[in-house]
Length: 79
Image (tube, rainbow, N blue to C red; front, side):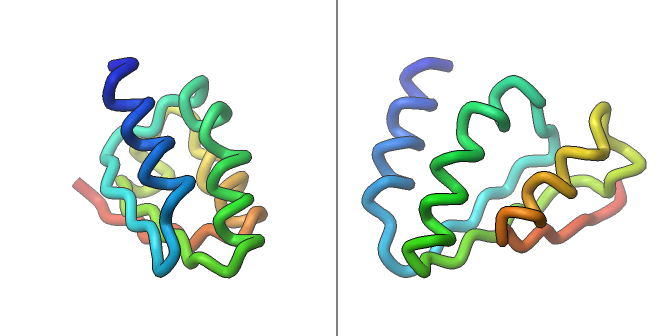
């Protein structure tokens, strides 16, 4: 898990064109860790899109609002 996270952070910090994250499950603790990185990307003009389950299917539906409030595009899909 930590190897993936380190690689993700490295890729995100070096992104220049766009970041697209496919994650059917959003863990609140992990999202709170990466939120500043995603916000920094948006501030630098790098579009960030997260594709995940619909808010009604997540443990913490408010996470999607946190992403959106920081300029991250969220695409929800049921199932």
